[in-house]
Amino acid sequence: MEKIYNKIYELVKPFLNTRKNDIHVEISLSFALKLLEKEAGDPEVVIPAVLLHDLGWWQVPEELQLKAFGPQLDRELQRIHEVEGVRMAREVLGKFNYEESKMEEILLIIDGHDTRLEAVSQNDRIVKDADKLFRYSPRGFEIDAERFGIKRNQHRKWLSECIEEWFFTPTAKLFAREALQVLGYQKQSI
Image (cartoon, rainbow, N blue to C red; front, top):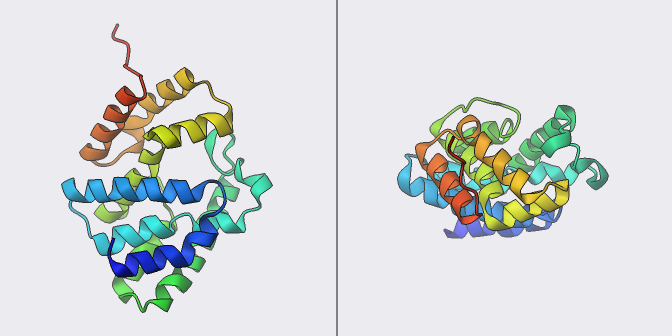
């Protein structure tokens, strides 16, 4: 990661200490970097957007967080983390005098990264895909299965059914399918 990305990450790291976002952001970032190798995208938008996209969880009380994502989803709570994330990300990027047009795209991406079903740009596609791919990583899979009390086989099956609905890029779909194989799930043929 380039110097400015490291500085951004170090500045926001304390705010990622909720909901296991520290782990989530690192894994999502690794997927974003891999996606950028295969899919057209602007690293100056994608990397900061991934680093900053879940800052707003810091503003959602921990006892309410499990209701704001996952099986018991409350869209209003989920929306709070996006709105607060935009506010916090604007402050962070302002400290680095980030290029205005890139900053505005980053903030737009953060503002709907979970609640907006369509992507607003190719960079948004990559960020949304990297965010969701976390669930397919061995660590992300275990975190979600444990926190939601889902049996692993049921969780693998559900993730396999979400691939076409969730992912925008062919590369992310491929990564998700490969990850499920590593996790031990093979779609049953009829």
